[in-house]
Image 1 (cartoon, helix red, strand yellow):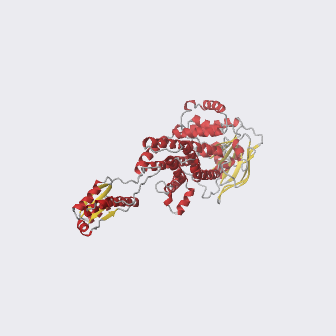
Image 2 (tube, each protein chain N blue to C red):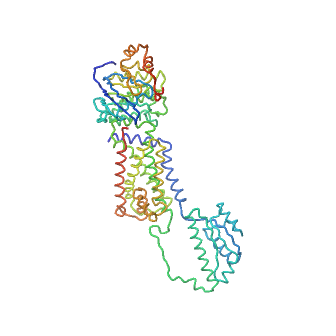
Image 3 (cartoon, chains in turn green, red):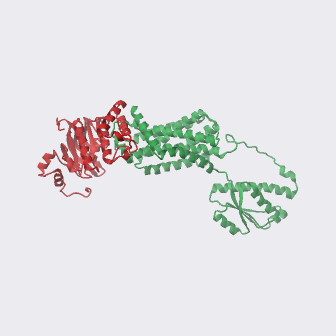
Length: 372
Length: 253
């Protein structure tokens, strides 16, 4: 037991003496939370619209004005040539082209119907479908007004046979930050614990100091506890720090029990730290650690449901998520913070991770050898 | 320092270590007496370090019997480790810790009491005349000093045997002198010293030397006897005479 204390003392001295470590511990969470929470948003604020209005009639101008008046659109340019407009999209100067053909107003009045065209930059599928949805709703609204004007039947406009009252639970304003911040916290806690653990042990391999430790009669479990515990503490600190930033600067709701969250994080860290230890037994240089750890991080993050709901993933992907520790933690941190879930609501995830962690720790301990 | 009481503290019988097809140690048999300074000589790649790592429990032997301090290195490795000190070829102190912190850490993981560590550290620093730099980071010290500290750390827990793997590599002649003084001191205090080197003048300082080549032992005796046997003026000549046989490609000197 006393030997473990000596290792802990050494590890903490080294962590805090390392000049890149302190900025990492304090800087990374601030940057990640402040930048990513703002940046990684699905709300579209300034859609660049290029207008090709070949009709130049009262009605077509009205439509363009409607777009111009919307906070979501910015008219980036106008011309009468569709080729010119296409070039704008090619040069990334416009996201969408509104093409109003000649005779738009005439057809509308004579035939009660007319056509316009939307050309959307589809490079980013998510953005394209959002632009489509936004534009469609603007045009629908315009349609309704046109109907009233042309038919002179004001009643029609108020006709709404079924009215829908939507209320979003747990995130009533559909605040994207509220949804993203817990997700970023997951990444933060994981990066710190996974990378630092694996890098730390492999650094000792690179330096040759691990050999000096391996000739001592130190027991495997003493070494492993001494190595993992500091990063457990640092990761928990990161979570507390990140939550504070979230509460103070983003006013994210903390509905559930904070101690439950930390308890669950402890189990989650068991998995991640063991994974770090396992990686360190497989790799012999810090470079290898980076590659292996990045591979796991990327796959696990993208499949975890941080951006896209896991329920829409194909069945095989959902099955793969059984071994994705991020997936459990991502679900649970949102459940606890936003929904106020209690222990019984997350018990399935809790025990799954507990079993997972035990297996990983045994595997890593078994793989860690004092003798080659 | 020569107090041969004919008790073997290391006993090696038919030790073989293979890495795939490569035979690093080819059927080694030798023993080391308690209290002696035993030199392991050979060119780079002769298999010295491999043998030393097996003796100190860092590598498993492929076959053979190896007893160190009365324990089998295969079955009682952890007991072996309690009784040995080790200083590797690769520098093994923590560069980002101070002299004092390094000593405290290694003393601590050998299970020494903090009071003992404190007293012995003060004593050690006084003897090394390093009291002024006890709070300096290892990285700021010259190589020779680091080596002296590394050696002191290796014998801090009073082991029965200390294994030194090319401890004086890259060190200036004066510091090498000092270093050998320290080895004698350790030997006088009853620690068996097992040292590998490729400096032939250092071989003269050993009680007995074992010359290895291509994984095999070519000669083993006291320096005086070896010089007589090969009719040589010094150990350098002995070594050259032994190594005169054509060497194979993997033995680059």
